[in-house]
Length: 456
Image 1 (spheres, one colour):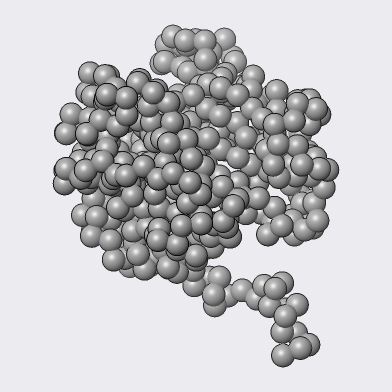
Image 2 (cartoon, rainbow, N blue to C red):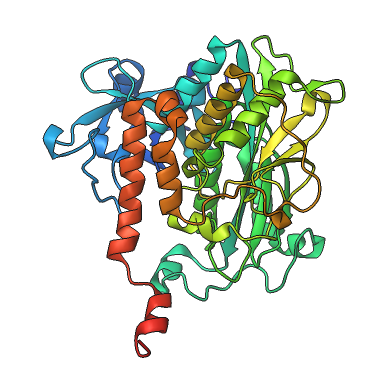
């Protein structure tokens, strides 16, 4: 049965099909860019392929293409294997109604080989699943929450694209961080998000205007790892879909304008036992096991940084004094640190301030778990708590300033190779090297034209 939050079990789904409410099922898989990719099926096709059959066939190039959908010729999908199919098998625990498409249900799928029951290891969802399984084998579970920021332009997507996203009118004309007056002006749209997302199976805690012109922040309730990654992806999809239906354009770029503050995705993570007991708090602070978990984050923040800053644009956000987590240290409720400890007792958790809104949550969560488990396995001591302004401490290690630096650190990371596996590690390196190459060898920027066109 439906439990009132838009989630559907098979009986509730069939009831809505029988009464004519649902006639379409969206079957989607997360891609490396953190997007939903897939097909819309008729109910009969979903029954025969998704419920009773072997799955929905799709090209494996979904895991090996850039944002322009150009095939990248990677081992998972290339001319050598004929860009072979994979099978998308629905995870029925994710089946839900789409409140702004009342005739449609949506289900997230896992990707399997076309000729076996083997999961596709380079699929983002598989990558996260493997880390969740590693934690479970150690008797541990984790709970996450994504705290996403984004920009809203008062322009429909088609016109925004036509204008090449330049000089777009934003939904605010002056700084309105926390200002209720500005949030009342945005309420006609933001209220749709707060009311419709819970009907999409995504509980919302709060909304607020942010510092940037047109910038918003919406906080989601925490939950188990895979469910939170799914919610994160669906939330971004939902906001973009609702925005375009309201003649707005939503951007989750990390830094949409060099003159504006970046959009973050602060990742909150807490450590729990297999029987759902919190493990983070002891004697008024970090427990030993959580201290080792946190130490692992510090130790591998740079080596796994590609999972927290995946685009050329990600690194434009890493500016001191703009609250991006560039200085690798941990502090109590200290926003200048890359890692911030917040809460107490059962709510005690670590906030990772490195990621921008452009992350793939499956990758970022997988990296978080891998780093933490390594800290626990090595029994690392609790790290020192930094106090003061971390941006002003020259002794602290910093995040790389550009994508090429992160790629090199990821290539050199023994943990990335061992935790994610050789196949996945090499796939990710090739994927991001292709993105870097597209920028460095295939683009002339406005900055270059302004600087060199006449004067050089």
